Amino acid sequence: MATIGTFKPTKTGYEGTIATLMTNRKVRFVANEDKKSVKSPDYFVKSARCDLGVAWNEVTEPDDDAYPLEYISVKFDGPETDKPFNASLFDREDGADLVWSRPKQK
Image (cartoon, rainbow, N blue to C red):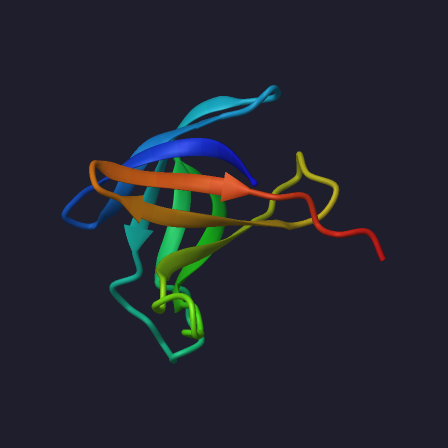
């Protein structure tokens, strides 16, 4: 997994920067205040006026060695990507990290 962004919590979501070899942009996770169903995203991911993706609150299944872990599952999509890709936002003591990992080859 690679960290591609760092964020700080806000009153309505998160704000931070995504920095990779191809981009360096300010990004906001904006809470979806008008969810239509339980499957609706919990956040909209935006940069300026552009929509970059959507995100949902998730919790891992507990196992014998670890407690459940809360995180935000993110799906990015846009004309500059070949296909949608996923990332995860994990809270830490002084903010949150957005991490990405390459999907496994089939």
